[in-house]
Image (cartoon, rainbow, N blue to C red; front, top):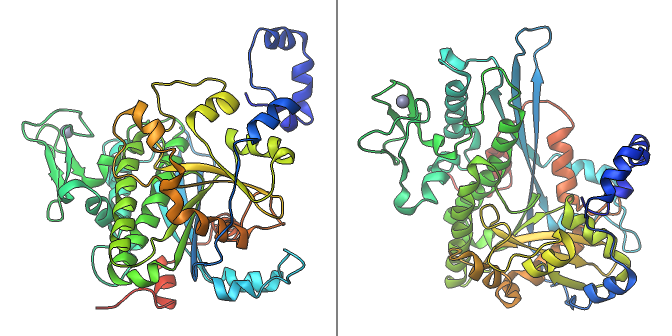
Length: 457
Ligand SMILES: [Zn+2]
């Protein structure tokens, strides 16, 4: 485990390390340790000076989501229900700039509360253990149906017309707007002709078991679902992928109706630009989708929108805070696989590619002129990944990111916030909105319409 584990071990954990059995065991283990002064100086040599852009977007969207999976009290066998809330906050940058006085980064909490009103949420309810939704034969079949219903209905719809919901986006980012499934998600049998999903065919019936097969089964979210076990991790996977798809859906809608506004926008996602677990493969389509949007915008004379994931926890964030005092202000480092292998993960694979199956964006470390460290991720400017050992290097060419990098730093700098460690205002607001209350979500469509961002046709 990384060095920061030491800092985290307050209270009870220190007793564990003092236990002679555990101490003897640790003596047999290798783990990454805090870099020495000399090592730190060597690490930070590679950081390059860079100036954030003064040209800021006019609108920022920030997204955050929270999962809740609760056992229903007193029921036996254990009965569980899942609830996911994805909040999206919209911030008008011109209004925001007036919030803080120039000599302080603290902002007026009453004005923050006003910003907070410009938020909305999409919520989803899913069956957990021992719940068979709408008479389904198994928990997993009911889960598939609930996922299908909630990703295809109006709750994720981002415009009054068109197919701008998650299912529409799933099809739109696929080759030829078609999704193919070779196996039945329920009985696992292989039909003579695969299930082919398109705009006109979103549901099939399996000839072998008679179960309905849904377009959204391609996300494979139901696969880890068990009848009576804890299904919290499947609910978290759902949350993770849906958060990324909701933002993609919003960007797709804006690109269609308001490319000019889109060029003046930034989108913050909480966490890396990556999709993990069963639905991970969708990251390739998201990468191509953002590449296509960016190329299309540029070909029409617009700036590409800024899309960034902010990474607040994990090995890279821990590495950043350990190095902070050695790093010069206003510098940046693109985290290559070699760098991560040597300084963060303890192992470098010259034939591999970190995040090859999950990431659609590159991570960077950034130290602002106020001395705060951020770890963020922006989309790989590539259409496809190709071979692992090659992509390891193509993704690391910093010049390829120049188009959006300085504007991304500008927006991080504007929103850096003293109140939360390594947090920025938009994410902090979205997080509060997603986690404070279990109040039902509305529709992000209303948020979008209120701000005049979609077109009714
Ligand atoms: Zn079947």
